[in-house]
Image 1 (spheres, one colour):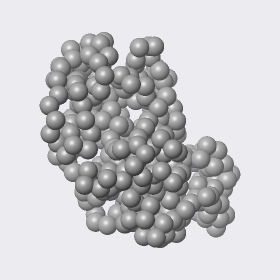
Image 2 (cartoon, helix red, strand yellow; image 1 turned 180 degrees about the horizontal axis):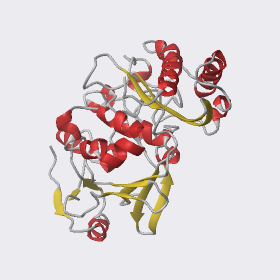
Image 3 (cartoon, rainbow, N blue to C red; image 1 turned 90 degrees about the vertical axis):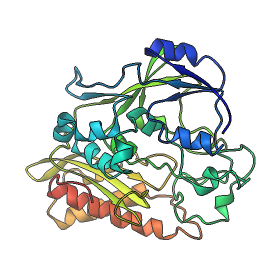
Length: 336
C-alpha cells in the first residue's frame, strides 16, 4: 500500500480546500476505497476524511420529497421511517446489497462512487484494463466475462456498475447534489454515471475535487407499487447478474406513471427516458399489461450485446423486467 497524506475535514468547505491538492480522494465509510488502495488498484496522494463534516442528515425536502445526506449510512437510509414509507423501492434495493456490517459502514455518497467489481480491474496482476490503466486494453473482452455488461459497452470496456442503490435512484428520478469550485451543481441520476466510450477510467461526470453533499429524492407516486428484483448466484452478499427497479403509479388499477431501471447490465444504471410510456393506460391484471411490459423490455434491451460467457443475460434481463413489473403491480411487499 502506497503512503498518502490524511486530512480530517470539519465541514464541506474545508474538505473542498483540502481537495485542491492533486490526486485527492474523499473517504466516508471506506468500504471500497480502502480495498482499492490496499491492493494498489488505485492510488491517492491525499485522503480526506469526511466523517466530521456533517452531511449525514435525512430530512424532508421543501418539494415534498426527501434529502439524503451523502454521509448517511446505507443501513440508516434503508431503515429510515420516511424512506420505508415514501420510497420503499430504495429501501428494498439497499437491503439487498452487501451485508449488514457493510451497510452499517458504507455511505450514500460512497455508494454512488464505488468502482466496478470486474476481476480484471481489481487484480493488478492483469495488465490489460483500460479502467485502471488507460490504453492498456480490456482483458474481459476475450476473457471470462459472465458478470459483464450487455448494454452501453465499447471496445475499451465491458465492466458493470455494481450498485443496487443507484438502480433504485435512477428509477426514482433522484438528483445528485455536488459542490465544487463553481458552487453547487445538481446532476440528474440518469446523467451522473458515464458509459465507457473510449475513456472508461472516468466513472462519473464529477470534476476533480468536486464533493457529493447529498441526494435529492423528488416526491414519488410509487410507494404503493414498487419492487426491486435482484437475480444473483446466491441469496445474499452477491452482486447482481441482473437487477430491476420497478415502480408503478396506479389509478383504479390502471398505470398512470412508471419508472424502470436495470442493474448488472451496463457501466451505469440503465434507464431509457420515456420508455415506460408503453405501460401507460394498461390495467395491471390483464394480458395487455404483460404485452406492454414485453414492449418495454424491447426498448430497454435494444442493442444488447452478449459476449461468450454472458449471452444468457439478454434473456434473463427480459424475464426479470416482466417479473419485477408483475410484482410491482401486485403491491409493494419487498425485494426478491
